[in-house]
Image (tube, rainbow over all chains, first blue to last red; front, side, top):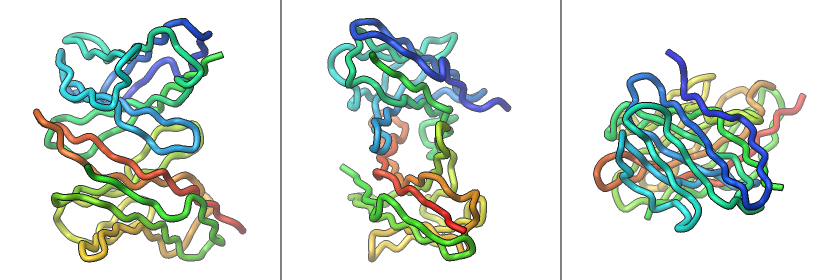
Length: 114
Length: 116
């Protein structure tokens, strides 16, 4: 069973460009979480999605960031008009259900904004 | 809101020595607690979890942790460190989400160094 997949693994964007980060959860998992890891910090929760629904986006910056998890295809974290402060590692995790407490993490996407 | 405090951002031990990484949590409800390990440029791998069953939890790679409610602690230990244990370790607490799901609140991490 393939693990959580994220692509790209590394992404370089100039200030003002858009960044799209993709996450394919483990097979059979319908719950996806996105976390951000800033340099020298732990992971911070951003958003929790189920298929076609955003359940909790309390950790998402109010502007420029959006997330989706369509019925078909991967979950997408989208950052518009990136700024240098967006440079971080973005991790996706999945679980089979909301009551299953263990989350499986992908390898992350390291975003660098120049 | 729940929170996690990891004492010591860097811990150094000799190979073969005891590993002790500290984690204290704050929670208004019975917590679910986790230890994850992160190797350089990789994602997080679950070491072990506490979900209100036995208070002494055994994980992978010889690690274990003990849940102590009176001390609000969930320290990670390993009797004998190996060079391959060098990594960053994160303690996390699970917080329920309205509508289901469980977002994790992480500590700031402890970098473990193992010396010959």
